[in-house]
Image 1 (spheres, rainbow, N blue to C red):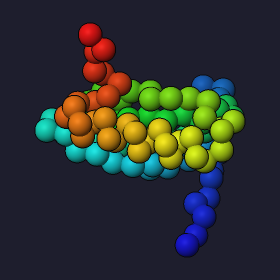
Image 2: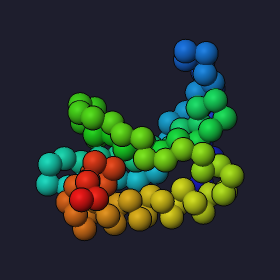
Image 3: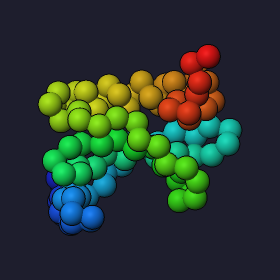
Length: 95
C-alpha cells in the first residue's frame, strides 16, 4: 500500500493540501463523496455531489487534534445517518 503524496498549493492566501476521498454514500437523490483536506493547517471534511454539480457542505473542521480515529468515526456515523434518513445529514433539520 502506498501513502498518498500531499501537495500544498496556495489559494486566496491559504495553504491547501490535496483532497482525499474518505467515503461515499448513495441516497435516492444522488451519490455523494466525503473528502478530507487540510486548509491552512486545519483538516476539513466536506460532503460534495459525486457528479460535481450541486451543493457542497462543510461537515466538520479541526479534527487533526484527535488523530485519525476522529475522522474515521465521523465518516462512519455520517454515512450511517445518510443511509438511515435517505438525506444529506448536514441538510436535515432537527425539527
